[in-house]
Amino acid sequence: MKRTAPVLKNETYDVDITDLTYQGMGVAKIDDFPIFIEDALPTENVTMKVIKVKKNFAFGKVIKINQKSADRVELVDKAYTQTGIAPLQHLKYDAQLEFKRHQIEEDFNKLKIDVQVDPTIGMDKPYEYRNKAQIPVRLINGKLQTGFYRKHSHDLVPIEDFYIQDPEIDKAIVVVRDILRKYRIKPYDERVNGGVIRNVMVRRGHYSHEMMIVLITRTEKLPSNKEIVTDITKALPEVKSIVQNVNPKKTNALMGKENKVLAGQSTIEDTLLGLKFEISANSFYQVNPVQTEKLYDLATKKADLTADDTVIDAYCGIGTISLSMARVAKKVYGVEIVPEAVEDAKKNAKINDIDNVEFVAGYAEDQMAKWQEDGLKPDVIVVDPPRKGLDGTLIESVVKMQPKRVVYVSCNPATLARDVKLFNEQGYQVNQPIQPVDQFPQTVHIESITVLTR
Image 1 (tube, rainbow, N blue to C red):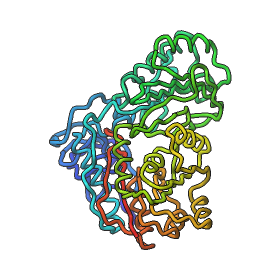
Image 2: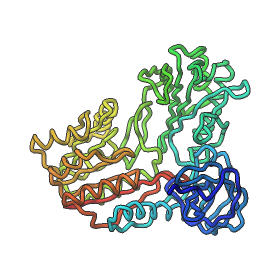
Image 3: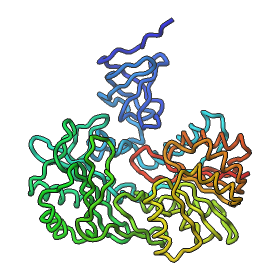
Image 4: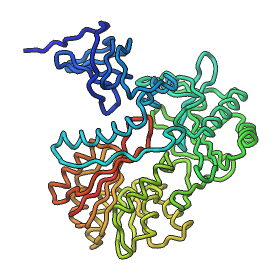
């Protein structure tokens, strides 16, 4: 028998919100039929309008809140919800931390894995934390604008204060925007792959206060580039590097292959856990330095390293975790798929006079198999994979190497739970609580550290 949805599009209903999804949407049910509603919180009763009906669920929009949650706070600016910059801004910060802890628990429960999850480590100031911004530039009503896309669309909402970014970065974006306007630089038009300037990227060292401006253009030529560079340098004394990145393709990829240094150096420097790092336009460098220090410090402590230990860091990036562990361990091997990042990692080891590290470019799963054939016997293996989690072959390689401990730094609880299940089947167990660390306050992203032992 075909089930018909108990709700109709454009109709309004009064509903009780019982839960939050991993995307931070409120969940209501009518006849066991789930409706997902943005800006609604558990314990609330809302009047909502159905905006989309699918086979097994629907989406709704809050028209009126009839009964408010004790965890609700006033919105700082509704543009942050519209664009997805701060989808949890309506939720009290301690409730955000609990939401993240609970989410990890839920993902493990779904797979019937029994784990304990400690309270999430939060920030004293859960905003203005991002040290990097990538801001689209578009033409709106005949004027060059910077801002952020409305969710699920490519309509730009002009924004000057991004709330979760270092305020100096926000100021710099406005300065650059005004200079681009002054020289009448044409914003990118994605419909026809026309125009000049696509995005402005700004990085700022949390400790060093060194700033990098990257102008991402569709064209090789940036008109008035000398004047633009002079104006930026004059207006922003912290700028140590101005780079043009050329991305000619009609693509959603942010950056192209070619970088031209227009002024200053090709990198800026910052410190993390007392180590110096050189950061280039393409470097992956954690965007929340305050929490990253807590995260890496904990990862090193939980790895329980001694001076005799050998460590493999399976997604080493520019060497941030590898180098902090190398100060304790005997030897650290790092592998990373992005060759430029490996070059950066080698440079960073040199800057910090750390010589007990070795970095290799390649797929983690291939390199691990190779190290295993060479008879490398690590005591600890650290994995910090992208959102899609670990490849099954990588887990097999890890298990074959028989490390005492695996330290799993995760940015996605669903793939973490799936991977832990695979480790469990091969004799590795979680025997201490999982520790969430809030790297991205006001958003639904969840970082955590899990330790598996043989």
